[in-house]
Every structure is written in structure tokens, then in C-alpha cells.
Image 1 (cartoon, rainbow, N blue to C red):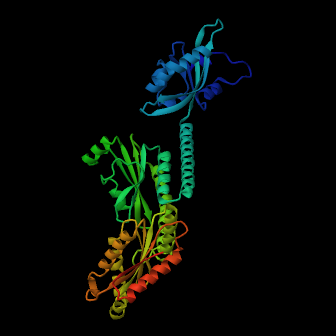
Image 2: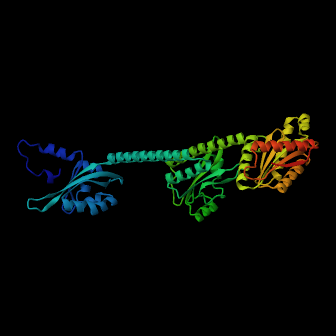
Length: 473
């Protein structure tokens, strides 16, 4: 019984002393009365249950003694100054220290009580257990952060999708991926490493200071995201030193996959410590998947273009591409005034190989001839297969002496002994050459130039084969 609260006589018809005592002791919140010196004068049972202490343990203590160190500081610097200034405080969040050492989150409402003469009598406080509320607030905060993270992830994916859709090449797609990754992860740097046709890994977009270190190899081999922190105790000392020299604290690697084929790697670099949580991993993998699909599409388009414009057996320009390049060379010659030439050759003796050894061996011979032609022409000359065993070479900026030398190199190269199954057979080249002067309006059409050159080739064939016939258009 707290006499300080029940020492007033009851009026007739008022609640009995026992009822008042029960209402006080078992109220749904803790009650606490303190003296002007902040000494606890009375408490109810609800408050004692919150602290796990007896009345004797609490009465006589300072209210601050019942709080955690952090709440004690808040009490001195915020709670008491506001209480003294305004005479009351509401819903102040404090933490009680339970007798067993645990902490109890509470909300406190306090009001100062004065005597009739204006002197301070003390402070009365209502203390509410807010543990459930704090847990609920934490859940709400967690849910809010999850929703914000989900919205941020969705925005990043939408922005990346727009950037990928606007890309016109796999390198533009790689650049879009770098920009999206840097923005989404607030990364210091990002890079896309792509494998070329020879299996070499190079930077397609962005910046990666540790290319060649092999740190990305685990992501390539495992086909899974890989993370590396300079502060990880298990990291290789040499790798840690390289990262330190590059001022990189953490790295993430995400493989770019097309089905089971690794196209390359997305690398993000961080100058400060970074936690790679589930949200990070999910977003990184989603960006990598999007980019992989776009890069795969561009590569398929390039393969289709190759199929449409290049001879599948020899890899040389096919009839369509050769005709197009010949027309462009003629147009350039007409505008520049520089001469150009067309070389057409047909293989002598090739039919015998086909008839004797079969078409598969004949195909090997055509591939060997194609390689010889590439080796003896100039770097800028266009070599094409026009069909069957007929080839052509478009030579820009070539005068009569220059094209004659190229034609002779071709004739000598074709006449060299064959390798492989056809080594016992001999082939030569009947060659026709047409030189176009480049005079404006004097050059024939591409089709006309080919007809003239083809006719010159047949002149060489009719004259005994394995020779060069040069004419002017």
C-alpha cells in the first residue's frame, strides 16, 4: 500500500479504499511517483513486474538507477530539461533495466505535481511496456525497407531494360550494363569482360584495374556469382595486395551466361567495405541475365550476317558480298580518280580431284586454296568465292604493274603442291585481270566489269591454262 496516494479520506459514495488500491496496483501500465530530487517514492505492482524487482528494492532509488546507461544519458539531457521547462512530457522512449539483466522497452508519460503554495511536490509517471510496439515497428521498418529495396530493384531493371533495348551492338549493351551496375550498387567502378572468338578475355566496357589477375576465373569456372573482400582472412595475400594497390576493398563477379556457355563476366569494384546480401545478389544476377540475352541476340545476328554474306566452306566473301564490294570499289575509284582492278581465277585440274577423290576432298582443296589467296594478296584486297572453283579479288588503288604482281603471286601460290589426301594431284589457276582507270564516267558497272574479267580468264584457260591475261576497261 502506498500511503502517499491513499492518505486522503474518501467521500460518501466514492469508491472504496480497496477498489482504489486494486485499480492502482494492477493498472494496465506502471505508475511511478518521484520526489523533487528524482527519488522513487511509490510504485505500483505493474511497474514492479516490468522491472522484476520488489518494492523495497525500488523505493529510495533514483529513477535513473532503473534505466540502461543510454537511457540514463537521454534522461539527463532531454527528458528532465523538457519536464522542467514544460511541466510534462509524453511518450518518451526509455529502456528499463530488468533485475535479470535484460532490457525492457517502455514509453513514459510524466507530469510535475505542485503544492497549493506553488512548491514542487514531485513527479508522477505512467510507464507503458512498448516491447510489442517496438517489435511491430521493427517489422514495419523491415517491411518498408524490403518494399523500398524491391522498388529500387525494379527501377534498376526497368532502366537497364530500356538501355539494353536502345543498344545497337553487344558493346553498347556491355556499356549499358556497366552504367546500370554502377548506379544500382553505388559501385566505385564496373566493367564487362567478354570472350572473343579466340577465347581471350578483354574489357568490352567500363574499367577494371585487375584484368589479368585471374580473380574472375572462379565465377567463370563455377558459372556462379563470386565475391571477394580484401579484408577476408582467407583471401590470398597476393590478391589482397593487388586489391590494396588498386584501392579496391571488395569485388563482385557475375558470369554472363548463354545457356551453359560463358560469354563473359560482370565485375563491380568497391573502394569501401561492402556487404553482398541477398538483394545485391538477386539484382546482380538479374542484370547479368538481361545483358546475356541481349549480347546473345547480337551474336546470333552477326552469325546470321556471316551466313548471309560469307561462303560457309572457305570463309571468303560470297557472291552477294563480293558483288556489293566490287560496286563500292568502282564507285570509290570513280570519285577518287585512282585506278582499281578485278582479278578472276578458275582452278585448272580441280574437276579431276572431285571426280577421283570425291567432293569432301575437293572441299578441303578449296579451303587450302582460299588460305593461299588470303596469304598473297594485300591486306585491303577483298577475296571472294564466286561459286564452284571460281574466285575473285577486288584490288583498290592498283595500277597495271601492281595488279600484275598480285596476279602472279596468286598463280604461283595456287600451283604449289597440295597437302592432305590430294597431295598427288596438281592444280593451277587460269587468271583474268581487268584494270579500270578510275576516269569519271569511264568505268563499267560491277556486272560489266565481272563479265569482261571472266572473259579474260577464259582467254587464259584457252591459251593453255596457268597464266594471266590482263585487259583494260
